[in-house]
Amino acid sequence: MKISSLAFLTFCCLSTAMAGAASDQPRFGAVPAQSQFKADARAKAEFEEHGGERHKWKKGQALPESWAEAGLLPDATLVWSGLYLDGGTKGYLFRDSAGNFLALCTGPGLETKDHPKRIDAAMGSRLFLGGLHYAKESVAMVPPGGKAEAWLRKVLGEIK
Image 1: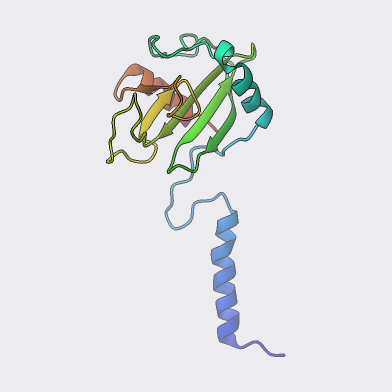
Image 2: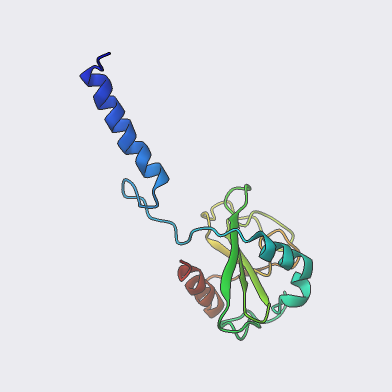
C-alpha cells in the first residue's frame, strides 16, 4: 500500500506539532511556566488537618517580608501546588523542616466578603496569603506594591 506524498507531509507536520504538546519547551513564542505543579497529597492532607496550628502566619498579623516573619525556617520548600478549576486560582503550600506551613495563592480574586469585585484583574495578578484558595476565611489579600508582595513574588519566582 502506497502513501501519497500529501498524506505523508500531513503526517509529518502533525507529528511535529503534537510533539511539542508533550514537551516542556515553549512553543511558538510561549512563555514557559514559572513552576511545575507539585502534588504531594500527604503534605496537603497534613496541612488541611493541622494547618491551623502549624500555619504560623495568621490573618490580621503584619504581612511577612521573610521566612522568619512568616514563622518558618529559611529551609522552607514547596511541597504542594495546584490549579483550581475556578478560572485561574493557583495554590502553593510551603513547609519547613520543623513542619510549619505557609499557604498562599494567586488568582483573579473574584468577589468575596473580604475582597471587592474587580473584573479587570488579570489571571494571577492578585496574591493572597493564609490559604490555598482566596475564598477561605483565613486568607488575606496582599496589597500590590508593598515589600510583602515583592518577597512573596520573589519566592514564587524561585520555584523550579
